[in-house]
Image (cartoon, rainbow, N blue to C red; front, side, top):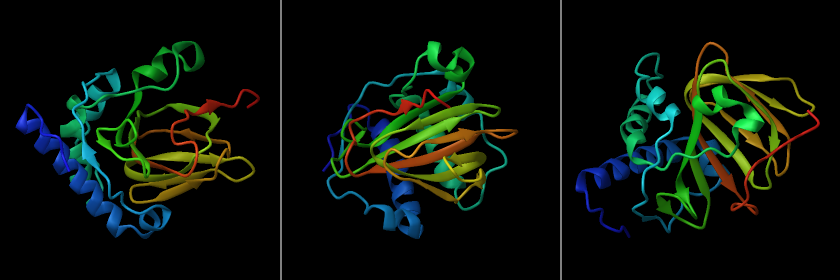
Length: 205
């Protein structure tokens, strides 16, 4: 079920991106096993919100993985039309971080495609960024679309993830992310309780 957009071209861009994610989702066992593809999706017309990271992302056209290239390109085409968000404030992570990071909720209770079964974000971090230790109630699975990042879990050795790799975070498990010479674009999926709650920074780290 879809609510028709006033702008048919914009509607087509959303549907094309949703279909590209669906195709990727169904072909990656880790995604299928983490949570089923939602069956109650309804396209909503939400006012776009631009942030600097959106402009940076749209210029990223090289060094793409062949398996995820189509999805990357769909997201870049969609980027000007979505409601970009940032969980944190300048006082917490600094202006440079906020200028080069952002996400939008594509599927979820407040997403462009409404569903109460899960939450799926598209998230971008530019190169040379440190996303400090944080946690949230919902369980989380990262799927790397493009680029690479260093992932950390409390009590474990850091791990570098590249395109098509996944990374799981348990409920309230502290974790952090660092990009080095490359940016990273990821599909971030939440499941379980706490879908409506935000991430919290871990102050003692």
